[in-house]
Length: 284
Image 1 (cartoon, rainbow, N blue to C red):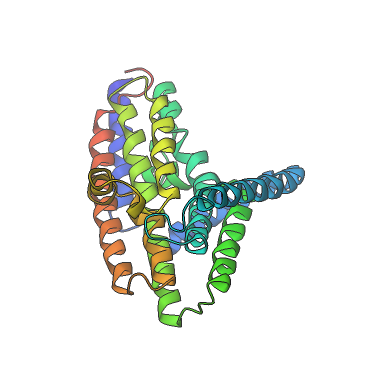
Image 2: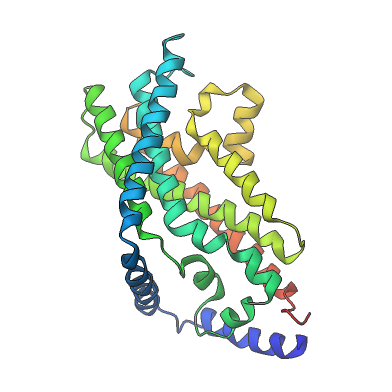
């Protein structure tokens, strides 16, 4: 069994990296994946209203919590209330992407490895990492993204700040980089399933780590701030994008965020390839 899987695995990897998987081909595969998921999700339209209610509840709760804190002080790490609100909107946006795209896919990686179901992924004519990362979509969590961006826009209005088109473009780049960083960190963490058996708690660890991005990095003590910027780069996820919109940072911060995301994606890709070589299927 181990030998057969090894033989099936190599061709699949070669096909993905031989140049045959063009951008257009993978876009078509992605559309097919998500069209099937959308058709399935539309059978449960009540989930849409549940998602709306849940998103509204957590946003209001986050703002109320911040409001209670700001009754005791005027700033949090040098950020005012409505500046923090822009960050909370970005956090909710990224959290929506996590719940809509990442958790339904990467969250299942441990199960795929443990049960040997990854065998079926490896025999498909698409890159295994692509399949594992984007096969499923929970469309209702897109409301988190919409509400989050709406909160950020409203907070900017309360700050009486109208960003330039250049700043908005830089914000979009930084936000995309933040999502890419979340993806890279979570996939790298879950890839440990190829070496260890009991890694489900790592998902809980990631959630706890992700929660640190709910506050501006300047609010943390110096050593922890260093870790969140340079070692576990959570600060790039939600602190940088609103900093660009509010004028705390220039548009060059978006380029730095893109560089961090590119490096992490490259390292995660390398780790994934190393991990696949250790995979021995359900029979291993």
